[in-house]
Amino acid sequence: MLPVPAGPPSAEAVVIRARWRHRMRQIARSIRTAALAALLLLAGAGTLGAHPHGNEPLILGVAPQQEPTKVFAMWQPFLRYLEREVGHPFTFETASSIEEFQKRVVEGRYDIWWGNPLTYIQASKKVGYHAIARDTTRIAGLLVVRKDTVKDVKELAGKKVAYSAPDAIGGTLLVQDHLIRHGVAADQVQVIYTGTHDSAYRAVLDGHADAAGGVPRSFNALDPALRERLTVLARTTEVAPQPFAVHPRVFRATVVKMQRALLKLNWVPEGKDILSSIQYREIVVSNDLDYDVHRQVATRLKIPY
Image (cartoon, rainbow, N blue to C red):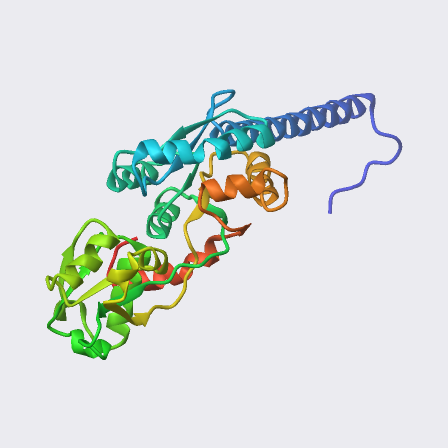
């Protein structure tokens, strides 16, 4: 064992220790400064990535379920209300076709958009969009046939079924899923697409198809004389309707303002007229879990998402 020196440390030892402590404090301060700078840099990067627009308008995209000019006119009162409530300018966009609109959604063009739930589950996975609100009215599909013809869903095996479009959630996908779950495989049915629900119903009436996929709204809107010649063979399970979904780049505080503004439409004086203009009954909070059933339907139909 080394001998322990007796008496107080030398002046030289005191100086060395003082210098060592000073150096350690400098190193500690440098580490803290570097750590703080890194945190600020990360926070700044997150802020910049969260909202690249600055004072530029947020883009509201709406699916063109009708003529684009009509869609534009329908949504103008909603757009002006949203700007006022959120305190930020918005610009409205639709597209010339459903296909073009869906392409833009999956590319992440819109800050907030409203449209097909199938597009939502695809865009939520690819872009990170998340649902914040929806209508209370749920979507159901109808399987429609001529009266006194088909009596059971299983009889449609080997028959022809008319649909409006390949990705229409209510009148196509839910009906196709219903057929599969009741024993009629996809390859057992000959499919034709007519462009609209009305055309699908007429294909049945004219004998060009044995059944048609539709939804309650379009079926009830048929001319009574035509509707009288048809009957609903089956009604599908109801699912959540089209969501309002926001891009992950939008500030959380802005998302909260948008969601709050949507819910306020249920009770503010102008809310009833605005909801009516976009064919809504009542808005409720929504989230991604509302669309898990759509993912199950897509899986059964082998639709990638």
